Image 1 (tube, chains in turn blue, red):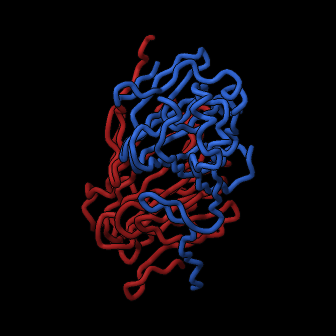
Image 2 (tube, each protein chain N blue to C red):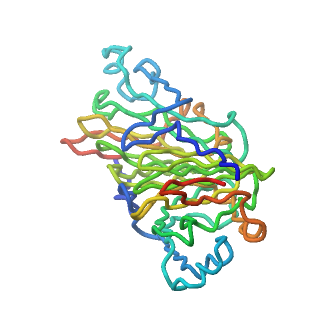
Length: 185
Length: 185
């Protein structure tokens, strides 16, 4: 009898890292986040090459492929711009009905959500919290702690990213620090 | 300014468990696995109410909803039927092009894969291994260790399960123990 192929995997999702063949990394500096913070003066005083977040992704299908899935980890650095927490750009999915799972790995974050009627709410994110983002809901993450905040994600390969609408109109609420506590106002 | 809603999450994916609101559990006894093992005599001698595996799932969308995602953990107990490792029923997705991610949490397993041309291969699964199952590939898991084997999964809510084809024709290779080592033959 032929012994068929048993393969050692080439992709690893250890508790806080995604490593292996075909894992790609992107970085966002503060300059990539121009326009998303309320306090423009504070933003402009900060070093524009400061690393804001990094994303390690495994994207096994061509973007737009129906039925496929993507997997990634985002590492969002701590900090504030004025009294507003460091955050990701935020997006709707280009295919608006596509969902996504996020789950916290390290540090303390906040998932900021906005539906198509521009209602905004947020969920606390911490190691072990799991978050379902249904279709039609824009999402961004903020680091509300003082250390690195990381989270994993799984999303459809035909979701795409609609950054433009958020870049133009923003979210209808902001997550700011008031006396050391995050407030969504 | 109105302070909008900040929610404490109600769903938790700790390192080996999925718990929280709306998590559902199913169990498969040995009797549910009738017909999938080669050694029928050995199978029939075993207690049919023996627990084979359990699945904890979070299914936030109605089955068949396009764009949505599901999340689950499977706990597959150790054991053998004759010289064949304990395994899940195995399925293609009913929407054949739907992909799935699996990743190992605990114990030692093997992901058995078969494409539509009935080519079979397998990947070792262990804590930290991440596995992408593209569309068109049937999949089942086997426990090749002596302790509980658990793994997490994320898949589209419109994937569905086609168990019938595997129930009828099986996989074209079996994972059996030969001198203490898993062989796919």
